[in-house]
Image (cartoon, rainbow, N blue to C red; front, side):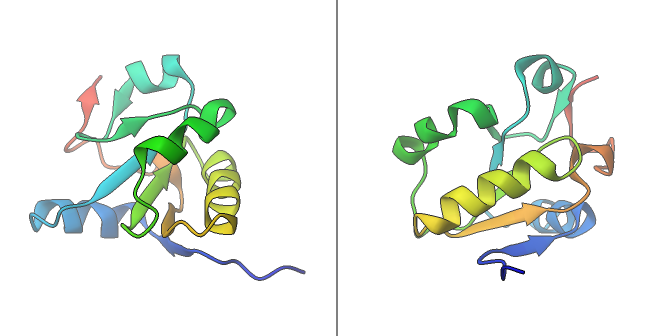
Length: 106
């Protein structure tokens, strides 16, 4: 059994941080059609299959919250990025549990 090298946060915690005007960096690893159906304002979109592109976009030292539809893809992205030394947080529950408040799209 491996130990996670990244933190996890609930969608409600992420929403509270955003509402509190905290500068929160979010990486959405869902597919383009999922992204178009609704997303967290200000999120960066890079599908999981193209995650190596994130290496040029993300600051390894800055905390980045990784999001997908449920949790599987964001978990994989967090494992990969944290293995490279990135400071990542997995948003548990994903967009399935994200409040409709503060969302672009539908």
